[in-house]
Amino acid sequence: MADKAVLVTGASGFIASHVVQQLLESGQRVHGTVRSTKNEGKINHLLDMQTRWPGQLTLFEADLLVPGSFDAAMQGCSVVYHLASPFFIENKIRDGQKDVVEPALSGTKHVLDAVGKCDTVELVVLTSSVVAIFGDNADVLQMKNATLSTEYFNTTSTVSHNAYSYSKVLAEKEAWRYHDAQPAPPRWKLVTINPGMVLGPSLSPTSESGSLSLMHQLLRGELFLGVPDLWFSIADVREVATAHLQAASNPDAHGRYIIAHKQTYGFVELARILRSLTKSSRIPKNTLPHLVVSLSGPFIGLSRKWLSLNQGIKFNLDNGPSLSELGTVYRPLEETLADHLESWKAQQSSR
Ligand SMILES: NC(=O)c1ccc[n+]([C@@H]2O[C@H](COP(=O)([O-])OP(=O)(O)OC[C@H]3O[C@@H](n4cnc5c(N)ncnc54)[C@H](OP(=O)(O)O)[C@@H]3O)[C@@H](O)[C@H]2O)c1
Image (cartoon, rainbow, N blue to C red; front, side):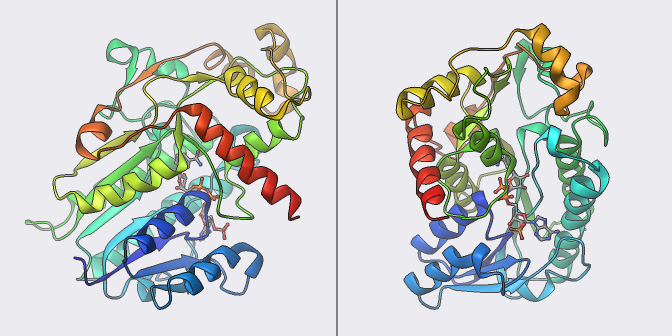
C-alpha cells in the first residue's frame, strides 16, 4: 500500500489534523478533504503543512451531505481515514437530526459509496467513538463486569436523547453493513477507532469539536461555581491519531478498538489539575451537589432523565486490544491536560 496516497476526510478537524501530520511525518502522500479550500482561517495549519512537506498533501473540497463529493479525492488512494462528522455536546444540540444524525449518516454512506467505486481502496479506518458502544454512563453498568467493551453497541440513544451518540452508532453500524455486503472475498477491510473524549494540543485553530468546547468553558472560568459530578473516558489526541495509523500499518488489526484510559475520570479531577496548572481560582475545585444540578439542568439543556443516567456514574473500559494489537501507549492525563492548556493559551493569544 505504501506507494499509494491515503485519504483523510475532514482534514482540518481537531483529530484529523494530527492524523494528517503523523501521516506526513511518516512520509506518506495524503489527500485531505475540507469543506472549503478558500476558508484560510480554518485550513491555515494545513497550508503550513503543505509548505513543510512539499508535494505530500493535496486538499480537495467535499461535503458530507453531497452525494459523490468524495469521489475525486479518493482516486488512487489505498486507505481511507474517515473522520469528518460533527461533534457537539448534548446541551449544544438544537436539532439532533439536522445537526448531527444526518451529516454523520449520509456522510458515511457517501464516503463508502465512493469506496465501492474506487478499486484502489483496501482499508477504511472509520473514526467512531465510545458513544457508539454506550449512550448514558448507566448503560455500562449493565455490561459484563460493568466494563465497556467492543462487544456492545449503543442501544439507548435516540435523536432526542444523546443525539450525537445516536449519530455515531448509526454511522458505525452503517459502515459495518456496507463492509459486510461486499461480495466474497471482500476487497476492503474496515477497522473502527472508538475513542473516549479526546483532549490534548490542537493544531486546528477553529475546531468546534465538543471536547474542545467543554474544556474551553472550563478554562474561561464559565464553570467557576463548580462542575457537575460527571465521569468521562479520556484519550489524548496524539494517541488517537497514532491508533489510526497503526490500524493501517498492522495487517492484523481488525474490528473495533476502544482508545481511552482504562478508567473514567471525574470532571472535577480535570478541573483540579487545570486549576493547579493555571493557578486560576475561576477554575473550580468542587463538584456541585446532584440536587442542585438536577434542578438547574433543564435550564442549561440537560434533562433530568439525562442527569439521572449520568451523574456520579463511573466505569472501567477494556482498552486491552489497543495495547496488544495497536501498541497504544497512554500518556498520563496530567501531560495531556498541560499540553491542552498550552495550546489553548497560544490560540487565545493569537485571536
Ligand atoms: N473530540 C472527541 O472527543 C471525539 C471523541 C470520539 C470520536 N470523535 C470523532 O472524531 C471525529 C473528528 O472529531 P473532532 O473532535 O476532530 O471534531 P472537529 O474538529 O469538529 O472535526 C470534525 C470535522 O468534520 C467536518 N465536518 C462537519 N460537518 C461536515 C460536513 N457537512 N461536510 C464535510 N465536513 C464536515 C468538519 O469540517 P469543518 O471544519 O468544515 O466544520 C471537521 O473537519 C468525528 O467523527 C468525531 O465524532 C471525537
